[in-house]
Image 1 (tube, rainbow, N blue to C red):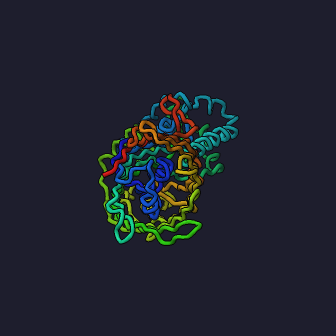
Image 2 (image 1 turned 120 degrees about the horizontal axis):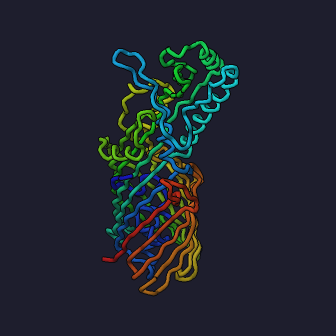
Image 3 (image 1 turned 45 degrees about the vertical axis):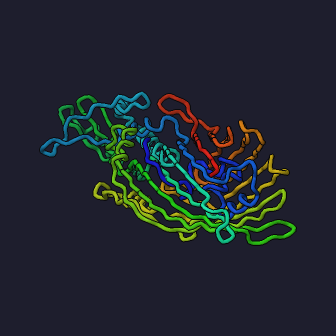
Length: 473
């Protein structure tokens, strides 16, 4: 899956950026609470460079469905009614597709006519299998990838008594998702059609039997061979998003007391959002993985947007509490409209309508941390109070727990280990680990423990890698 680069805080990542870096480092990036930068600058933390940071990252995630692409290609073979001749007449019965998983010839299906009515159960089993595979792909059959980049710079440590932080971020995101039309199978209609088979003679042409629900059985009286096809509007939708984000975060000290200090922050952000999608009916698919090449050549629709994030942080000697509200204005962006002439199903058209709109939804984030003297050891927890939907229509609500150690060593000044879990949507959990070496190089990796099999290879369902540098100037 190939994708262009775009924004990091515009919506939730495959794996949250808050899981990488320690609290002080991410407070000086686009991923931190808008109020935290002034706190970190005021602390003059010797473990943290307060000039700027640059980070690149990438991630990939798959649904819990082994051999995803082969299963979609398998459905494509079934969702393919035979062609017609130039005069509109039926051509010879299509050759049975070779498939190691399922035998579509069913040579023995009508061998003994006295058992014809019992053979309806076999047809119903085949239909149920097809419908079940559709439902499975709809819920678990996805592949998603993203690339990110992020740059932040402290422009001023004392602007009207506060800290001004400039941020630029870019993120690319792409996903394959199945949109499926239910198979409305009528057993009585299918039974009536099957009962006509004994009346055909060997010299008659191939018969087309409408079993209902878009399911057609082609029967060849000459050799008793059959093939089932499905005329259905189910499709594979490939979506991609590109976002550029530019922000100015201003934060300052608001209240001082014997118990601690209160900081507030505001981050106005300009967004440049590009969205596109490519839809292909299941029956028209010849190579599922090749569809990702189509998205690279698709036209993006670009829209500009403006939004604001707000934040508060209460900091004491050995603990701190924070809350932030992102995307206060909830701007909405639209995907280009797909060609609707190819689809007749009202259900499919309604689902496409849902996928053509993306709202950058408001989200409340809360955080808490405890630490030892000089913050050599720390433990931070972050929670999204509500779930939000990203452009791919995936729900995210992250819980993140991270423990960190910061030393005075130049070679290995800090290390971090933690976990994160999506409390909505996929429910996937990640193990996160990161180090800072030579004081300015950050390396963070996150992986799921769940695995999936694709193209015969077992791999992690989710993997995320980030590499960055931090510096003073």
